[in-house]
Length: 280
Length: 265
Ligand SMILES: Nc1ncnc2c1ncn2[C@@H]1O[C@H](COP(=O)(O)OP(=O)(O)OP(=O)(O)O)[C@@H](O)[C@H]1O
Ligand SMILES: [Mg+2]
Image (cartoon, each protein chain N blue to C red):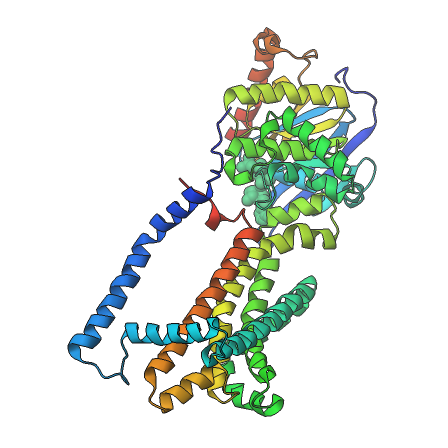
């Protein structure tokens, strides 16, 4: 009988070592990039308002972190919390309703087929243009105005992808269910939803980045002082560019963290998927 | 007719069944033309014929995954749809069609889940069927960790799991090596004899068809039709030596001639 390659169960130590060597080139590129940046600013004597040194940005960032850790109130971290809340709230609302609506409409193919062109058209509308309108509707300082923008931005790609995943199914796999005279309900849970998961997660990964972008850009149109968007505009207009850049760094960290969280959940939910198969 | 036919209850009755795919002069494919076939309870029928002669299509019609264009088809005296809803048959498809997101064991449990067997019953049955196809140790593996032949055996275990009285098998052993194939043949014969199922079996191998079947249905393409039905007339139980008997060779040659005729037409 054919032998099988067992999924290697790595210990933690081996795992981390493997990860480090896997990411080593990436880490080296990042280090080289930062070094080049630092050197370029020093050698070419670039003005702080054009481009601050990474070391200055990091110093500013650590300063704020120290304030937070010593129990003080750090505006940067307050802003980060508020923006994260808007992004996360909008993400949950938008993606949740996108998936839910896809599940409902996919049940009646006619409706979802009729709705798809609208969804695709709506998806190519720059939703962010509605930010001032939302500020009017919900109030400038109400996080709901940012959440609404984020929710609308992530809703369409999530819904479109979910509908695709629920309906683009190998006909042979559907035939199998038919041969068992499976109910539509059972087919939904045993076939359509698992088939849709890779589509849903690829939408959620895109949505995780979009939601942070959406939150910050809609804060540029105005909001409470303690939000990253307002923090950046105020610091920049006050010519405090180290401060602005420390907030940009924070935004980057939030975006990356959000994305990684979705990826980790994805791996847990669908360990079978092609992209996670060990190939060695 | 063979002595293994338990009684004369008709399991399949096809009268003048036609299946045409597509429409318009140019696009039309006559996949099956005027199929007349009666299959009785307990028979083991092989369908053999060149690629494209409509073997899979005939199985799909019986399974109610396709509707005949014209003609009458009855399964256990019912129309095919009713038979499907009553879960009268188990089918092994030409492609294994396992669900990637289920382990091997869970794939075999799928029909049992749909038919609402208890969790413990499902586990026991799935394990038993996997052992039968020599994959008892692979219950917790995912399909992609198995070879093509192993996947096909999982599909066989899945079809047998709920012990259907009618088994439709579309080239189930096509992806297996010669030795595994021979062992699977013996296992299938054992199951067939102990459970008294009716089997309709598609194969491209003449010796396999003769070795297993009570009758061999020879088909030819364009348009797909039945050109001959050969009674194998070999005693059961069939053993390794059956393959070496003069009678066996005689039958193999007879079917080979018939297939050649079908090709040369
Ligand atoms: N869904 C379909 N739509 C159109 N034509 C089809 C369809 N299914 C089968 N056919 C045609 O019907 C004919 C019979 O196909 P079928 O799959 O039944 O052949 P087969 O005997 O099983 O062949 P093989 O041995 O290669 O599996 C072929 O000409 C094929 O092109
Ligand atoms: Mg076929």
